[in-house]
Length: 74
Image (cartoon, rainbow, N blue to C red; front, side):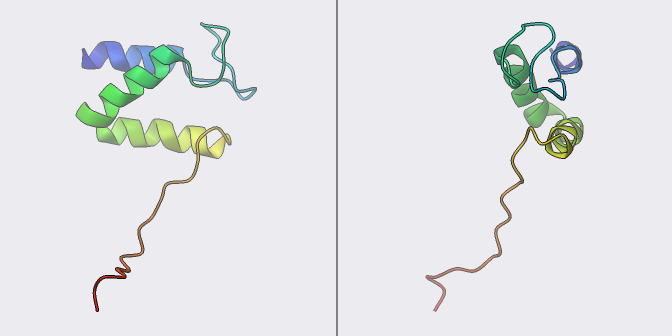
């Protein structure tokens, strides 16, 4: 399962024109997003690298960083 997810992510990785070369569809096609979800659960390091590549290409939003400020902590 994990090896198949890695293969799908590498083959369906969006181009710089934000399209899947295999599916001829929008940047994040269904097989890619499902395989990325598997990687996030079972191989988070690989998933972070894929998301970093997508972020540098302008295809992934920046990660939300919680500043640790709690409004209830008074």
